[in-house]
Image (cartoon, rainbow over all chains, first blue to last red; front, side, top):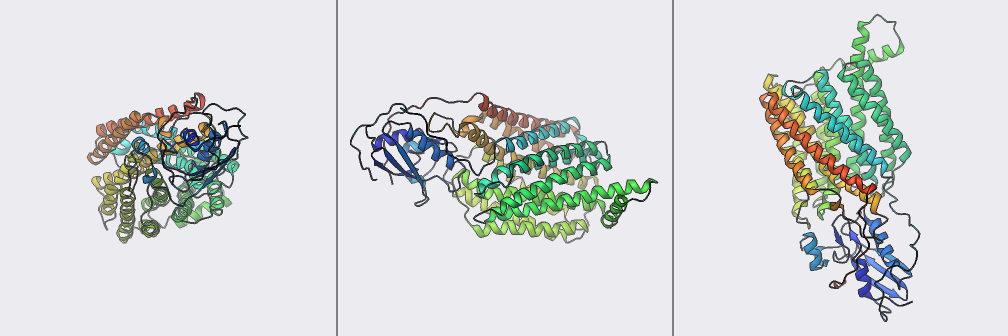
Length: 103
Length: 480
């Protein structure tokens, strides 16, 4: 089984949107860290707001998107709240898509 | 970033194996059919109520207290507002307070009691059959007991107590008190009817006479006003304010700016209502002081809401939020009217009678209904998305919440509603049927746009908008 790269994981994760904001989680700046150990991928990510009712769906989406990708056998998603998300973590594409402003 | 084995190129191509087993997610939210059943019933009641106002504009253009006004008020309050509040609470309390609903079966059972109870009450008010109002009111009350029990048991599971939980708890208490007060009023009317009959003395008759003897000490109009304030301020307004402290920051990407200010607004609202209830019931001149306390609570809420909005990170406000904020804006004329109508020894003239009509209309339609439609524009898309797309995300391309409905219809609905409230208010003050009918026709148009959007959202269950994933190359962001 071939090994996946970080850039490829990010590209896959761009398919997962935050349905309330209407932007993918990568350009939204929700993905904090990626670890790759063989076919095992660990994602450390956050959400725009704690207690977001969509959090289980988004986490599920991340797992499913990656598990469908060749080179990924196992996915572990860790949701963290520190550091809290802020708009400066967004890409320019994300800011343009959402109209969210930087502090 | 720690990348341990970035040695070989990865495939951007499709899945080579079966999907993983479905994980147990959505654990806190109840099944979608439960809140949707309440919401659809509520919207139907709203449509019926607004249509009735178009057909009978005299309901608002003339002084109140006839059977049709009372029937329509209960259709709005119980059929529309209460039904939506219940459905939304079954959905939002577990989500907002990060716990699980105590019992979904109990909630479905309550739904049956609720629908039979409120529709029977409205029909019996319309035909002024107070004995049957009492019977259907008792069915409704059984539903309320089940609802309060279910939510109270849910609240006992809340891990982190906060201002939202406090507001919900207080609202449940006021709701219970409202129903007791309402049933006591109905019992009094039944006792009057029984007193005129020659039937034998029975235990129920004696019970009704006892209640009647107690309630009869108070002025009947004052008692009815006190009952109405318990429900509208104690339950609905308190819930709208309490829940918005959670939802407005969530939807605008902001935070509560002062927890003390938020808590103070909720505390003052409760204190003010307790005092207002007693002073309205006793027709005491002190009701002005408690009305001022309620206005202060609303002002502090407005102050905190403005601070939350100033700190928001999402610049654009969608139509749902605009509906809600405009409704909050109507609290200003409503507060002024509350102060005027609480003025000691205010004479009851045809004009002050119309001001009372305006007060009731602005409270139920200008503030609560407008705010609820705004909130429903956030809740219904969430329910539909969660029910239809939450297991597809990551596997297929799914729409965002804002893609589920038409913003153009939302905009038409918003302006029609605003114009409708304005025209109807002018018609009520002038005591003229034509502007009231025109205003209510605009409100009906707005409700129809909302209904069309709800139908359009529900069609996603039949015809989902799912596309294959499309992986494209874009700029790689720098991770934290």
